Image (cartoon, rainbow, N blue to C red):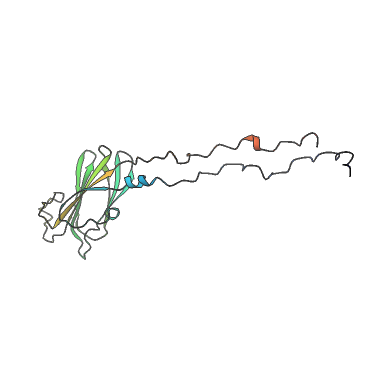
Length: 199
């Protein structure tokens, strides 16, 4: 069989309204975030550098002391009294840290289990030091004791925990997506404005 003698009288007046091959009109609103490297989370964990006085076991670090914020010069801290779980709680629960250029000692007495405290510590050489003091001695006199004094080696009624907290995260985000999506798809993929002159 032979082809038709002539092509159709005229091409279609316009291309289809939205070809399936066309890219979306706008990029997605935000890129998908990949999780931070595992080592990054390790750097957010306070490090126990010393324990003095009683040899009571240290509760889990993420229960007793938690980093809540970092900006390179200060670190936000949350402490939770999870050392003494008795009806009367801790006879004393105190902590010491640098507030700008001086040390601050915050003393608390008869602190119930799971009570929390929040504060901001000043950083020096990219770290902040926090000392936590817990006493189990019911005969402790709040008027005469120094709530932020290191206990002696023989003291079994008081414990001091010393923590070192990083003030910034040295995470490698080089593999993370860009902060904003690409501007727009190129025009080369869009359909032509009018049909070709000949079929």
